[in-house]
Image 1: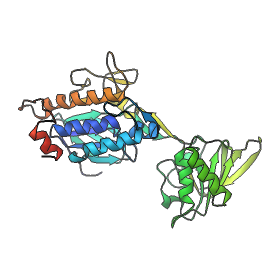
Image 2 (image 1 turned 90 degrees about the vertical axis):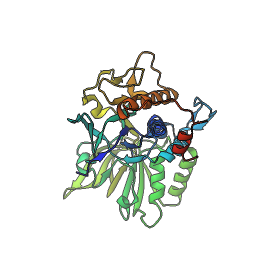
Image 3 (image 1 turned 135 degrees about the horizontal axis):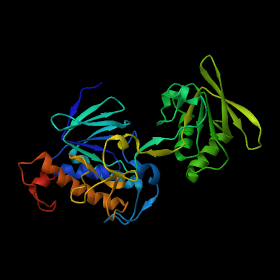
Length: 345
């Protein structure tokens, strides 16, 4: 276990609404720690809409999901939030001093008077290949998390998937000082969801013999001396064949999991947290919920609505964080204090 971190505010979720929550708290002079299950910021917006157009962000006629996340990161930069990525919040409990103790899957503990849940529809976790016995090799020969070259250096690598990530992983593994001994892309058919230019690069690499593509559906596996040796495949012709490997990297997309949130004792409706619309507080004092994770009469699952919710949640939290102070509404156009906090004074 690591040393507990004391913080005024902890934000769960580093998607667009979570990042804007950090910004609004920063305007109030509150530094945030941020936890996200993904190894990078962006959440659903980056994972599902990274290259897709968004037209309904006020003042921005058009941007992609990744461009929006980049702009939000620039916006929160003056407040220097501390990020804890690649870990999921597991438990939340009330301490005798009424602060909240939050523990993550990485063993990190936080103690905070205010907790902001901006987890969208839940933590986005990698989809895993459903094959009996394959889970026994998780973390040693089978990986579903973010691809890392040190896993496949000098090894016979199989990458399962049809996305941009799957194809790029193959292309990366073909070259460089940590190149794999061989690279095979595995998908059930010779059609891909990746961008056309990515597909063209993959086919060129196959033509040059730097990698190969195998079509088939995994149906079993073969092991020897507690090591994974090969996957059994059913190919498009209905025949069984074996695909030998040292390392399997699955790139099968992400699946939202509500996860431990459901066990935190908060009032819920249809797997969403019930909040009031004054400050977007939940049924538990000090815990706020913003974005797609919450519900209230008239709720609309739009990013711009999440921005509004984060603003009111930040103001609402000040009653707990600075009960002796009167929270005044200030404007970034004229407030000297806000200019100082933004680093533009």
